[in-house]
Length: 475
Image (tube, rainbow, N blue to C red; front, side):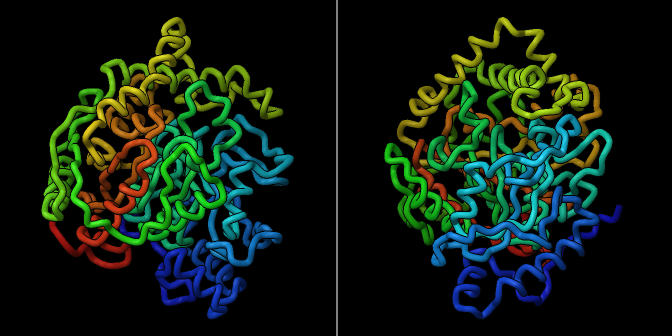
């Protein structure tokens, strides 16, 4: 497999437009929906045979909401839904052979919400089995590949969405995040990924049933502007009055902030030297912009790492036991080795699980207490650059694989357990030519602060486009 970048950017009607620009061109009728969809299909056919990001194409019958307000903010903009969200009449496989391809009876509330923003859904994207892994790989199928270097992972669990957005097939795509699944693939593919505060955005049906509601819905985007406009649009149609309003953020605030700095993870895994250098240089950029950077300790108890692992296993165990009740024809014997290993991990520690869940439910209080006096926290997204495909394949023996994953994806789960917001922005290219992002975490309800900081970093870091050589500061 060549390490040449794989992308579809060309001077067609999509050009390099982000979703906001594309929506405006469609609104002014300078582009037609038909020619936009034709360009998306052509781009997908060009790159997806290599990237393998699409689970189910809908180019012949794209999904639209015909009754939507014609002034909806993303009217006519093409996007993909991740294949763990129900679309009426289509299968939802959750990346698993254990799930038969039975058509869903109705749309998920998430599908309805995406359509209400005016998006046109052109397909469903691939994810690892039930989103348990941070890489979109499978035991017996081709993986989803990273457009920046197809020998490497695109991350996960929204890895299919991230690969297609980074390669230029669509400007934005649906993603959701239960342990980093928006922010990890955004980091791996050079994108922007915002995890909202719990309760800010509409929640999927399954997420509402979890004892700790770790999953939030959102998008991966190529521009901070698209993320900001989506946040504003989502808030207008799904307003949580217990949270501070975001509004439409259109640039940096210029207000000096106190920003905490965490370089090593809460589970005592040290970040690699390359990652440390990137995060520290981003900290210097923020200092130059007038912000105060202070090293800090992660605001959670030492038990957090083991508690989250147990909960991770608990979700897999619950799936294996009750999956057939919600997914007719579900066959737990066909689950991949990693899913079975997670379930076994919890089963062997079952008596500890209730206390672990109780501590995770209390983690928002620890987080809020530790965040006193800080406006945001800067950290890595991952402890090292995305590895080559195969390193985290679900066929690797479970104990070895679990250790690799836990060490790599060590920063993101905190925000899922606590329900706090966090955003990933691209910062640099690694020595292997794949992107490395940084994460900004905030207080509950403080998405506006994070988006303002993301605008500032987007301007200052000048991250290269996939179809141009690297420019800007050398990391």
